[in-house]
Length: 290
Image 1 (cartoon, rainbow, N blue to C red):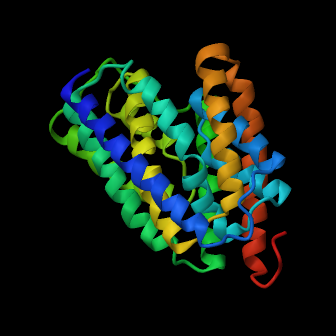
Image 2 (cartoon, helix red, strand yellow; image 1 turned 135 degrees about the horizontal axis):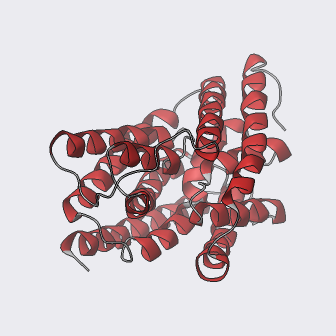
């Protein structure tokens, strides 16, 4: 491994320890329920499986939470970041060391995304319910449009580069800061990051260590803030953590590939439904979401 990869795994180990410690302390303060449920485990296992294949997990998870009324709307951003941290760490452990890209670019983009997530989580964890509903509804609509564009081949396929320099390096680093901040609101980083790097001329495979490495670090960083403010569902987060690791293992070591186009069309339908349902709920701020 190169120096950037070694530094990444050291930082990942430290942040993961802090994240787990924070979770244990928060759980001891007495959440309403801290037991895993079958429904949330099913969602976590499925979406982590899709995540490992490169489809992403935030938009599908949000859609399923909304469809089956598993998590209150205002708790979804925190639950996503806390509950999907373990699967993100597992994915990064597989891809960051297996795909070689420019160490400086890897370090800069991941660090930038983490800083953006820390800022974003501090803002989102204090937003009122209606603002989160509107924000996540818009985020899901954007995700659905991106899925459609990718499925229809309307976005660039990328170039041959494994490194960036000059203004392209700066654009990639700055954009990752924004994507890290937006991820705390439920806008997944995978698809936007892959599209960005393709527009800058990088190989599609080069996006995997960046996007998975960024998520593996920014999710526990954001999760710490959500745990501190208790703006997340403890039961659903624990369920997703346990099942998500199995989903990653099945996708990475057993299945490895599926007809992704058909899967994306299914995801588009579910995500679009959840977007409109979230925005409809925002029109009725006093109505129950369950």
